[in-house]
Length: 243
Image (cartoon, rainbow, N blue to C red; front, side, top):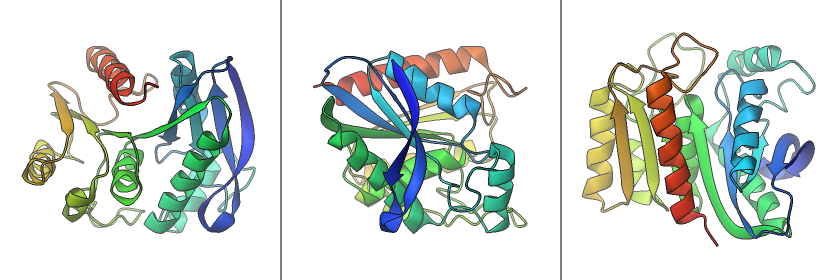
């Protein structure tokens, strides 16, 4: 594979940093826009991009904090973004749209695009899927889709459940039964909305897993849940992003 830092046109034509990982070869390959978690554009998020490239996809992760702290460390950039209330929804959609267009402009792209996000990125993957025309989307324990974050949270995120009717593509949701944001009750509410609107979706909740169970460098890591989750993601993308 080839992995590198690039510059893409994001929301409003802003030039923002992004991490591009892609298979070597002519393809054509499906594309995955990786939406990083709240801690930012960090090493673990870039590893996810390389994993998708290894699996045969063009992966592009926009640095959502490019404007707040260009050139800063992931920790400092995340702190700067939190101090401003987080990434505005409109800007997020514009950045994901720009990333999608950048992937489609590559000669090896087959024109199909999915999004995937973790934690705040899971919510943002859902937001992108109800705002843009995509081929697939994955929400990994995205909070604040059904209920707002607790009072005092450093970021502002409005619920999105009323936009379930606008979902443009199949959605895969992966959740922990011990998570509180989103709680199992919130997951059930979102699932009912999707079912009521006749949307294509797959939800899986893992017993004994809480928030961030994919994160290998945190105490929250749950190997069995993460392994099964990765297998489901691979099957899901294989179904919807193939040429």
